[in-house]
Image (cartoon, rainbow, N blue to C red):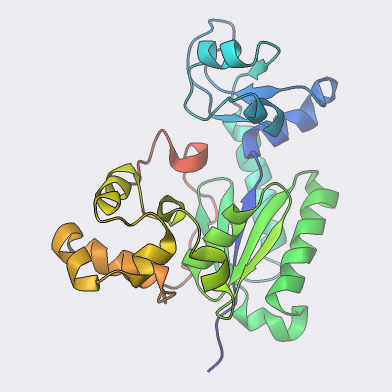
Length: 258
């Protein structure tokens, strides 16, 4: 049996990108979504890439964002609008597979293993999805193409915006193992600190570590993360309702990793 073909699609700066479509007058200007701009309180839910270059980050207070980027424009979140775009994205995905697992509004795993004979290989499907998201919705995505969910997600995070990255079995060690271990899904701040105590700084360090030592310090999560780093992830793409629960972009304010 051949390898699975798993994609992970991530809408780039989702909320901010959608707001730019509805505010053409703000083209090429820094923009962030979050809080109550009139009252000048609240936090940044997402910022566009222009604002990020100034140092604006998700979770930053609006007043802090204004300090590092004086010309920034804040807009209040419109979740109904973002959910509508998310549904339209899932309609595009559905033309390639019914095996979709949302990860919030802006991200989704797709198992296209069964579609490859009709639609082409994973890379071709990713390229077609990317083109359609731009032409039909006016937004860009970064897509990871891999043989499992963990590395597909890592691939979509690898290069942004508007990029496609493969993480095949033949290349994941070369591409993934030099990355910070914190880039691996489910390695949050607490776990990252624990791993640093053992000198584990990269995904490769984690892959080469002694699994028993990891277990003694992290419990069963030690084995899980060791397996992920070595490419041993056979978790299925779940057939879920594509009306995904709302999460803050980047999982930074509503769903801590650990």
